Length: 234
Ligand SMILES: Cc1cc2nc3c(=O)[nH]c(=O)nc-3n(C[C@H](O)[C@H](O)[C@H](O)COP(=O)(O)OP(=O)(O)OC[C@H]3O[C@@H](n4cnc5c(N)ncnc54)[C@H](O)[C@@H]3O)c2cc1C
Image 1 (tube, rainbow, N blue to C red):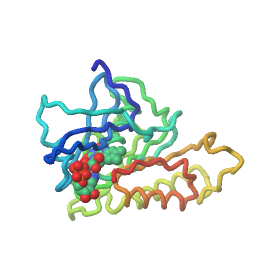
Image 2: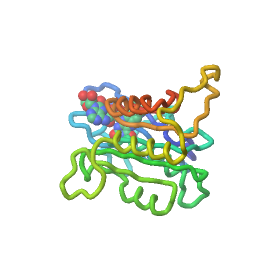
Image 3: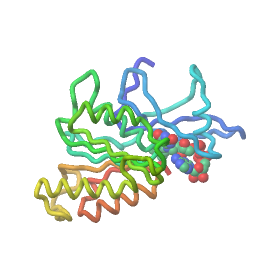
Image 4: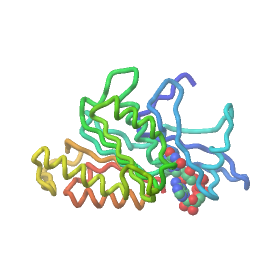
């Protein structure tokens, strides 16, 4: 295949036959920006799971069957201020976004908009792409990296607790800085949903209990459902 075009945030479906001869298909978010015929995935082993372990056991040079790209978990354009929220491997599409927004060897696509990545894991050892995001934060003044641990060791010098705590700070500080009311006033119901435009969106990816919690938080701030874009892994 000469090229594999996709939009940052989309996923592929991988297909394989399990030990009982049954065909299995699972979705995996692409964790890189489009780059000719190359892309990367971020997969963790699920205990007792078939596909995650099948992928994790592949050796260099092995082939797998995939179809795609699929999905609508993509950034609104033109790019706005954006809060990216992920737990675990839910960081995969966020890395695809940041590679696309802030390419190392091409023009910036963020238009100077503020982009926060709030990334929750249990332990420090579960943080994917930590060095990359830290380097990106140093290189790009409008990218803000906020990893947070829910089960940190005493020695962890960074943020603690669930992602919601840190999202709340971002939303409240931004509203204060820009002099915006919180909760945000309801949008004019006369505007058709397809025409609604907002100056900030939240993109949430991970397991359902986290996604639901963050959606509830944003709704509590008066955010419109169209401003809350999400992908659930379970
Ligand atoms: C749109 C989309 C994108 C996805 N992208 C990714 C990705 O980038 N990286 C990635 O690792 N996974 C991703 N997933 C999850 C992935 O599709 C599989 O569900 C996961 O790899 C487990 O598959 P399995 O065959 O190993 O386990 P299964 O045999 O399907 O499940 C085994 C058990 O584990 C539970 N389980 C399933 N998924 C998880 C999980 N993620 N964490 C904990 N328990 C789980 C199940 O409920 C079940 O009880 C994505 C899912 C969707 C819907």
